[in-house]
Every structure is written in C-alpha cells, then in structure tokens.
Length: 233
Image (cartoon, rainbow, N blue to C red; front, top):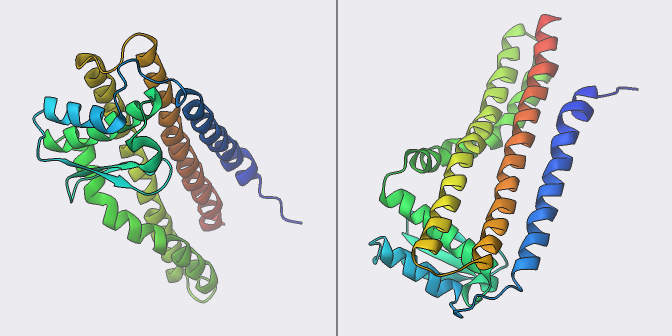
C-alpha cells in the first residue's frame, strides 16, 4: 500500500494551520461585531470618511450580498461592502471596511505589490487550471517518450504561479490593514479599546493569507519532491 509521506509531513500541517486560521478569523469577527463604536458610525460612513480624507472622492461604495464578501474592485474603482458590514457600527465591520479602502489607497498611490498582484491574476488563473492536467498528461505519456516528462515540469511551473500570487498577496494585505488602522486613528473614527478590536479582527484576517501561502508553498514543494525524484530515477 502506497504511503504518501510528503502530504502527511508537508501539506497536512499547513492545511491544519489554514483551518485554524479560518476558525480564528470567524471567532474574532463574531466577538468584535458585538463591540459597537461610541460615535455610532457605520462601516459605510467610516469608509467614506477615509476615502474623502485621502482625496478619493471619486471612489464609490456599494453594498454587495453575502457575509464577509467585502472587496475593492480596482477596475470599477468601487469599494464593495457586504450586507453584514455595510450598515454595522461594530469595530469589526469598521476595520474590514477601512481595510478595503486601504486597497483603494494603494492603487491611487501606485503601490507596487498591489499593482503586480492584479497584473498576474489572468496568468495565475490560467496556470492553476492547466497545472494538474499537464502533470497528469506528463505522467501518462512519459512512458512513450521522455520528452513528455517536460509536461510535468511545465505543470509544476504553472502551479508555482499561484504560490507567487499568494506571496505577493501578503505585503498587499498587511499594508492595507496598516493603512486602515492609521486612517481610523487619524480620523478619530474609533477610540481606545475600539481600535484594539479593529486591530484584532484585521490581525486574525491576516493569518488566513499566511496560511494560504503556507498551503500553496508546501504543495509546490511536494510536487518538486515527488517528480524531482521521478526524474532522477
């Protein structure tokens, strides 16, 4: 019976970390969505204040269906806030809303990692779809000719693009959170323990990006170990 030690040793710990990070962000958000700010400012109002403070009056804010589906759309130049965030006065919601505004500020200031991440999205999407088929085709047809083994390594390279994307995502997300907290404090949107609540939510969210990178990196390393050994044999 085949025992895949590479998955157990490399990927499984990263997957467990990712599951823990996901649970952590949900529990932290649930905790601080009950902490309401003393000024009764909604997440929408906070986002609008920060945008205007940074001279981004042209950036619109829209409501989007779902829970924690908040994002900034650089093509439409729109910050979209989820149903659970838009009208909420919680410190959790304000932290999330201002984080998305942080992305809008990044694009306005030509922040390199954010621009690079957006630029590689199309090629990353193509690479992620082609990776597994190319690897499987390489494995199947390499018995006919060693030439087809090259498909395996092209497939691994395609998978590696997703790892690069996750790597670039880290500084982009951390910077957006730093911008959010700075703006929240500069505009006195939250005070005292309220700021701490927003920080806790954003820090928990940051762990999910670290976990996503860990999973992608370990999967990439696993592919290299499995098929690198195959090549040597």
